[in-house]
Length: 266
Figure 1 (cartoon, helix red, strand yellow):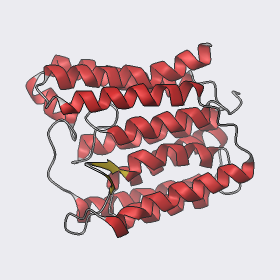
Figure 2: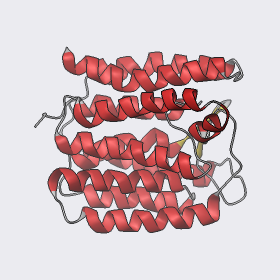
Figure 3: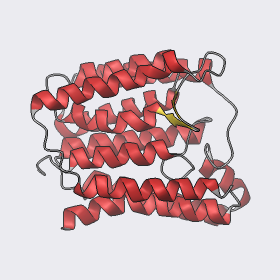
């Protein structure tokens, strides 16, 4: 029961703080409503969905998620040379935030294929181009190295860093209000509110890194991905995952937490 509480708090604290920010900050009503509805879907998935997958099933799921990362290159929408979104009716979901958290968990659980999984995700991030996904891969690799001292994560992190630089140079778009650079924009107007929102995001990060009922490698890799996405939103025009408007990261981390729940804690 304590493990499920940690999972719900890890997802619920930053998203709830983001809902407060959206409502009080004057965002369109559809934004907090969409995030709240997504949270109501993601929390039961994260805390209660039975996902005890065998090794073969986990690798098949990894292939499906990797394929999902490449779908926008074919389906669009395209903004110039940039294609990062999965069209789902009236909503476009950021594929990196949707698929990568679960991919990171699957990589952490697969010692043999962890580097190829992360490198394949980097290939998609390079084509899109998407510096946020590349930075999330980089920090996930750092987390995996920190947890298990796997030297293979060092070149993966280095390649991810170079990929993120290339993606920033080729794929920066104008920031969207209430979606991207949330903490930076809020800090310029209301520093105390930005501090509170940042602390809520930090609380989610710490819950993932230290309180989840999962192996150290899984916790550190997943927390690293959250740090990478958040770093991208701080330094460039990328979505502020969990605290800004966007269903994809809420669903993505909900699925990742469900997968993480079925790993043995160290």
